[in-house]
Length: 107
Image 1 (spheres, rainbow, N blue to C red):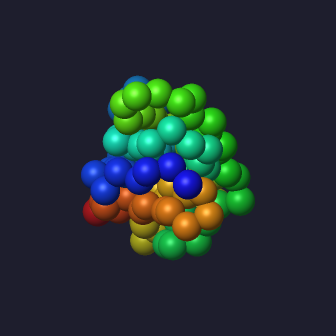
Image 2 (tube, rainbow, N blue to C red):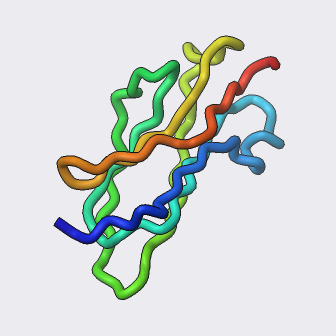
């Protein structure tokens, strides 16, 4: 497989433009230092994958890639005790989970 950078980072955060709209819950998954390869991104609530996968085909390049993907949280998951994470799966054996978790609703 492709050489894997040990510095790949995955960060989950609220989407600021969507946050300002009020009646929505959109998360962003920001990934940096990715090698060129096919991958998919899943968002999770309390460690359980949402069924939707976002597939990404990264073109070959000399340097690492960075990308951001958004996910709209279904209203059924708008609960104060839900914790959301983002997981990146690359190839058959590589995966990274966001280092921070986001609680969308309440403190």
